[in-house]
Amino acid sequence: MTSSLIDLSTDDPLPTIWDEHTWIGAGKTYPSSNTPAFILAERSKVIQIPSAYISNIPNKQLSIIDLLKYPLLSQASVLILQKGSSSYSNEMPNENLECLLTRPIPPKAWLQALEAALGQAWFDGKRSIIDPRFKQSRLPLWVLSYWKEMSEVLEQRARWKKAEEWLRRWGESGDLLEEADRVREMLASLDWGSAVSALGATCPKHNLTHLLSDDWIDDEIMNMTMHDLAARVHLDPDLSKTTIVANLALQNDIHKAFESKDYSKKNVGLLYRYTELFKSGKRKHLYFPTHVDGNHWVPMLIDFEVKTIRYGNLTITYLVILKLKTFNRGFAKSYHKIKTHEAIERNTRLATDYVWNQVQRRRGHNEAWKAGGLLVLRYLPTEHNCS
Picture 1: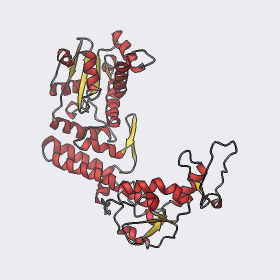
Picture 2: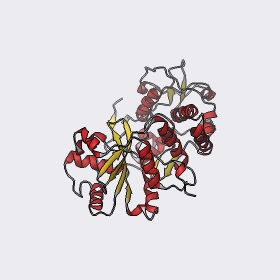
Picture 3: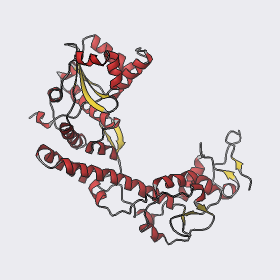
Picture 4: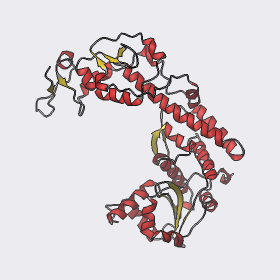
């Protein structure tokens, strides 16, 4: 059969109403890029999971704790050599779909190959998916959607399971025990399937697992942290006159200016604005996070009054406490009232303080900033709550 390519460059408008006889088994090539909306709409119908089987997938409104308890099949780790394009059949499905309740989910790499080949297989008139793990086993096309959904659930649960294990390891005694208990209360109230929209940023819920692990936190969490600190400074009548807390946009501008040697307002607007602000003497302190050598977060303070730069090296135990406090305070319904400036100063003292002449050992001002990359103050201890 000769395959004809759909010409999307022609002046003649494409049809907007789906006609199966025009597209399926008609020798056409599936337009994988710039796919017309009416084709996407019909494809979504073909792979839509029937309502009778959606109930097998954990509801996204379940709490994280309930997700961890949910009975799920495992995902196979065996390598499937059969190509995605060879895993479709012209024959009708022949399996009792109760098998979905007992078969492990196929490996992720094979599901991705199936997904990539689906459009053309559908256009070629394929009616089923061949499961090569079982002899002569053919399943409906929508099973790909089912497997993908279950694969995502398993991936999310694995992340939260790892976070729970980390929490159990660290939250055994002292201050950590109290914070760990609060985190568990949060896990029982947060659903696992929605995004977090808070503190000036939006990210998937599983991003919070960075706070309950030995991993470095990511950009979204960092920006949330800086956003909250900056908001507290802004609301304080005294601090707002002297202090700025910057987010990751400042790091990006510093790096961009250094690489391009262009410090103009047009090229690095935020850096230019901060520069003018501090030149005029309207602010005295700039706090921002910094990422050193691509593998280490440290807090930094530029004091324009005494003309020093300080940075600290947080201990592992203290970083754990800060992570737990961040998780609890950052996503609870109400915030603790904190004396921001005192808390930041305390964080800096708890870390090892350095003045600018020590930073100069890294081959001067610009080189040190470039090596740092740039980023991170952590959340503040509850000991600084105001009564």
